[in-house]
Amino acid sequence: MNHLQDLKKALTEAYAQSSLQNASKIAQSKSLEKLIRNHQQDQRLISTILHMADVTDTYNDPNDIDLALDTIDLGKIYERVDAREKEDTKLAYQDLLVIELLHYFKHDFFTWVTKPKCPQCHNDGGNIEPQGSSSPPNPNPDEISVVENYRCVECGVNVDFARINRPAKLLETRSGRCGEWVNCFMLLLRALLGAEGHIRYVWNNEDHVWCEFYSDSQSRWIHLDPCEDVFDDPNLYCQNWGKEMSYCIGFGDSYVMDLSEKYITNKDKQIDKKSVVSDLQLIPRLIRQINARKLLKTYESFRFDTIALQRIYDILVMFNNEKVLSAPVGSKTEAVGRQSGTAEWTSARGEGGS
Image (cartoon, rainbow, N blue to C red; front, side):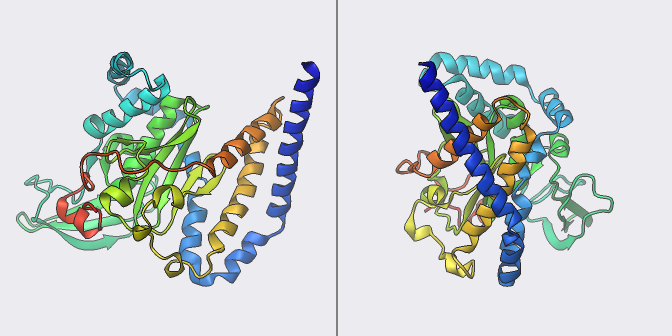
């Protein structure tokens, strides 16, 4: 038995070491820089993906995690988990915890903003008219991307809506659109699952974001949409909302993955990728370059661990296994169309229902 265990360990470490060596060659080849130079017409898409590559690092600050745990009502969440555990024996405790966090976040914690309320009359309907946008402040500690400007035609009051990206600040403001919702939820998810939990930010090129977590009991990544309080329904967007999409990219701690096939489950809703990118091999090549650097960065973070190569192997196995996963048939969500946002706003985005 010891001989077989030693053989397994040797093979595992050899595979991990070989993958690290290959990643090192890719990272040192300067191929990424060449890729960027040769695709000037695709700079917006390349810049977005490169900017998002390490987004999950945003949720690792110990102070932010402590603040998140102090801010939410853990008692209410765990009480609901205990109650659900008695009723539902099919899902593991970790899965139930995420389900209850989703429900709490949607119904008790965060608020949707299509247009900001007037601070004087407190209305946010037709009285609020857009007036363009302005640049973020300097300095910009809350990582505001843009400030949307509005005016209340009834009160004559100017109303600003800052699009905040710093998760810790969102624990305070507790409002926004899908970007703010997912950003804040990811911090809470990291806090509840702990350092060993795996989470992933999913970006869609057609202006939506959501997230995933790796279920230890199911050995797979589970789709989560905090804006909708939806758990494990990757068909939600194409088959329920009727949303047309080109690319869906997942950004995790250790690697990036093209998740388009997982989420674009209706061929009629697939936007021709040639209309989005000049070369269909660009995104796979870009992701390959990013993953080489992320794998080396991950290894560097625990290279003094006695089982460092085993941990790299586990990451690679998780990555490769995911390539053969198939999405379930049909959307499980009963409500038709997007539920967050006004009907007018949802319809304008093509998300009102297929």
